[in-house]
Amino acid sequence: QVQLVESGGGSVQNGGSPRLSCLTSGANFRRHSTAWCRQAPGKEREGVAFIDTDGSTTYTDSVTGRFTISKDNAKNTLYLQWNNLKPADTAMYFCAAGRYVADRLRVQEYEYWGQGTQVTVSS
Image 1 (cartoon, helix red, strand yellow):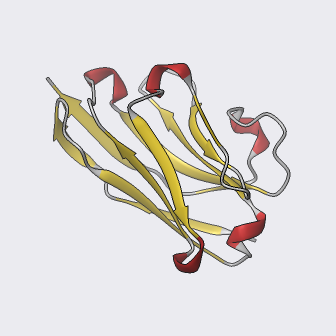
Image 2 (cartoon, helix red, strand yellow):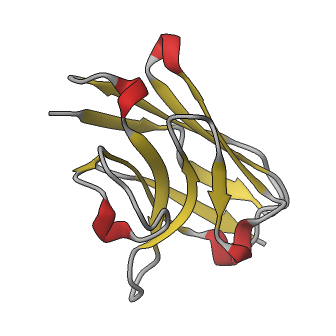
């Protein structure tokens, strides 16, 4: 069992640079693939950034070049950093973990989820 707790959301001005953190516990963090997903009002949840156990990353097209996913295995923490935020990035952001992930940005691949943290970007 893996527990995930996000922090760092809030309201940011267009282009602002907060960082989201996700503290994990309950299982070997190093053995799980992890991702950041988001869900905007009225839209389906989507995977935006993925990092595998070997450190390889994948991003959805809309955030490539603006978002960076990373993790600190010693701290059992996953991060999402960004620049050039846009109002279209406004959403509830979730961290997720899965033991066996084939399709990296497919949300159904993940067994464990955090409660989410709201990020609101104003122009």
